[in-house]
Length: 200
Image (cartoon, rainbow, N blue to C red; front, side, top):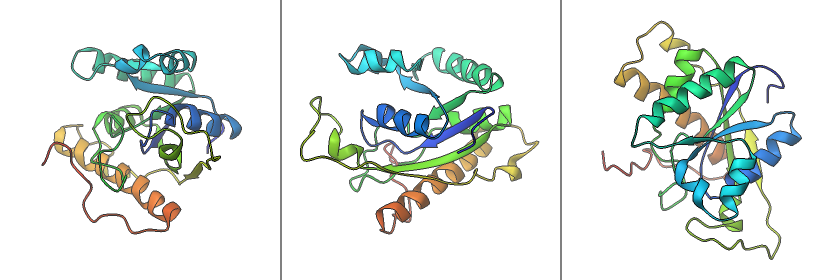
């Protein structure tokens, strides 16, 4: 994990507990992340307070605020911050809890800012707080596993206009790096094709 400079941390998303657990991990490794979180999370009791305390940037994907969140993220990168991104945009709906097809915001931010994208895979948050549940399962004690990979090579997109096809391809490269790390972490083989909740 780079200790200094603006960097994008792209992680898989398993549980509403992910932001807290990953922030703890990153803090222990020399970085305090700025999180992009769905605006709805700010309204969830306890979790909303925690997300605000982490100085998260709210994202409303169905409005012009989505573009604003990327502008704020770019400013934070210029200030040397580490931006924690969940490219899937929500907790995975894949039945095996593998990463889904990602949304293109992380690729757009990376290509426009030139910031490195560090892929992070984690496993175990879903045992502490399964998606959709509000009460954590504290006992028996859970283990949170994390692996950090080298920066995703996006050099083939340098100088290209960030149109839809380029953004989708770059996003797929980022998600493939996260998925490969998760497969190694789990000791399992990932699906050949990522789950697409849009059915494409």
